[in-house]
Image (cartoon, rainbow, N blue to C red; front, side, top):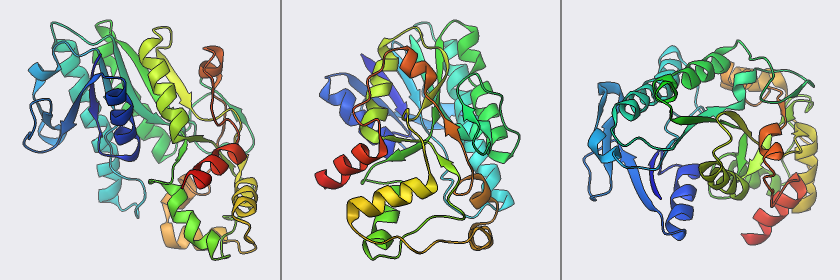
Length: 298
């Protein structure tokens, strides 16, 4: 296959590039600079510029670009978080729609933040959506794919949970304090964490680019979410370190502001109903198995 990927230098994107190259597929990364290699595609979502002809004949487009959430959410940062997702997706969608040889599949990023914080409520792809900042960003992000779906391209929304890897994301940030014995739960620890190992995420994407029966939203999470307290206990047990220190909610809100409420303290108990229905097989379905695999391998 020929696969075009935005966000190809990020944690998930770089893992997907490795997977497709191992499969001997041709990868065309979208880059926000002048191209250095023939297969690169230059684009500038803010300026609505893209080398559209280089997308002709591509089989799959995967859109993962977006401003990091892990920063203090000032008004300007919130605008960048939204624009980096919605503008880029809209530009890609319009470009795909204009192609003579359109891709079969457009996998576009989204997040389980679309459901909002829902305490203990079980959630799947048919659940109602939230109405906080991240939920509204995700709704606009998904809606921006409509030009592609309107011309018959299969669009799948990757509603991504917490992706676990030792190469980036949350887990490396947790390992040092936990190994020093000063790790602990966040707030009361009752909030649900819906997670997936990077290996399973990559395999799920591989499944989605070949299974043409999964348009629409797909929850990219493990079948077994855990509470923050359970996550803390499992990680501490694997590292054989105590985890007696907890960070109070007010301290997180003081340090991180609105971001804390919609990320670290948000509760989303999400089930991957559609992946399970499609008979996707998880290599690391439980948190204990995933963390042991990751921490033993490194």
